[in-house]
Image (cartoon, rainbow, N blue to C red; front, side, top):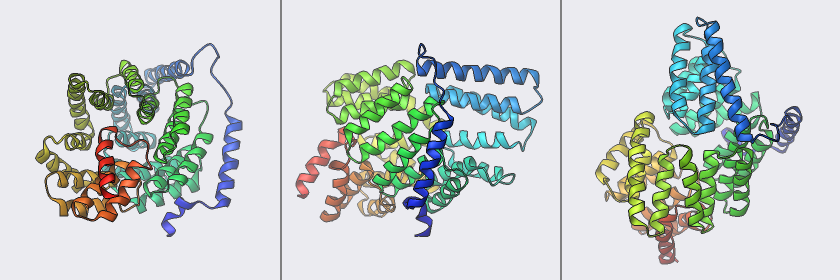
Length: 432
């Protein structure tokens, strides 16, 4: 299909990208002093950016430039530290910038980027379109449109936007989006190939970005069942940027997949020392459940629900909470109501999956099948979606289809949910 050109890049394009990677690598060759850790050097650098931007505002408070610089620095600080309060500061700063100059292009780009962070995807798409009234040759804005369209479930539109981004500027950000689109379409090997290019093209003067790319590469390797090499990528990410929050979570998942539950617990505890996290609390609850520590699990789950309610208010999305409730057979009617609200506004495969699982858990199996078919429309190998599909198909006595999708969840994906793994293995044995 023409619109899927991005998913099957030609050999010629691959050569061009390789040359671009080599050129970028030759340009950026500075390293932080040996006496300072990479994470400390990066933190110092971003704090200096914040200070310089604040000074720029002090000198020219009626100009938008300083506010844009400050908002950008705050967002980078949030990304590096995992402290999302900096995103709130960025939001207020962008508002100030747009109050001074309503159509200033840089502020519009920053607003779209932040709206994506807050999961306000339709708003981000609208803001990106507004920015394109001034320029249509900015690869970053095409990337923002790609992200928004992916999350809204318009995959053909996302492919076209990503292809435009690649045409304008084939770099690490473009390769990462290629990788994700390939992964969504079930092309795991292609996703790994593109993510390797993203790692090679990443600016070594931005260690957080390099670490992020390595985490994504490791995640795709986990999806392919290549646990050892995936964990090596997570280790490299942590060497590149110590205590990177996504790398710590990924490393913990790798330890779980390797059967080292206690090791995973220690990693999650290490991450929680940096900042509270709903994801970490949920993961610890699951691990304590597997370790037979019911009281500790209960405490973590309560922490998760408290933190996730705050996240849901900010992101205007209850999907994470809904998935948790459904997996724990709690608040099933409310879960279906909230899942339906989200499903009516966006049709990405993960929202479809949540809706299908909520329907199934509420006894509406035929309706669940229709929606899980939507979730599978891209050919995804995602373990959770395929496990849910297998469960729904089995309930309808579609044994061959159930067995096929269970293979993806149990045998081909070493990062499958450890709490659900026993149920998945039992179901697979029943189907064989």
